[in-house]
Image (cartoon, rainbow, N blue to C red; front, top):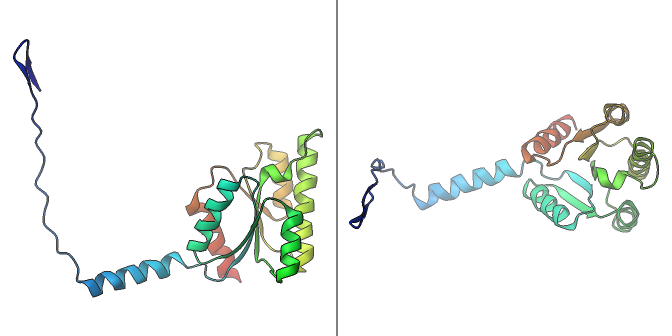
Length: 177
């Protein structure tokens, strides 16, 4: 930048020249896209019950899970989810639950959250007839509560949940099945 009072300013930018690259043929681009699609949908058929109170976040998570090939039943709460599971015969392979759904106002937070989440997990596991894997999003900072949930076989992922971390956990679950 060069500037002189009353004489204006001169700005110059120097950029490197980009190297040319070959553009793949249409058939090659289609093959690459199909390969990426197969890689993205590596969780094909995994049935997920998602309990998330925030509508926008719930819709975002559903879109993400579906893009990975999951079959998703998403609700804001447990009761409506159980009704739809019963009506549609949906048996999830994994439960994803928001921490806010596990808390109860007006009680000791640790005891209420532990009891509430335990009730949610047990209700879903009871419906499924087996101890399906469960994950809670946005867990508390309280180490005792986290340990209690882990003893129940519940994984805690802090918010904001990183998609790569969630996907890695789901992949491990699916590979064990």
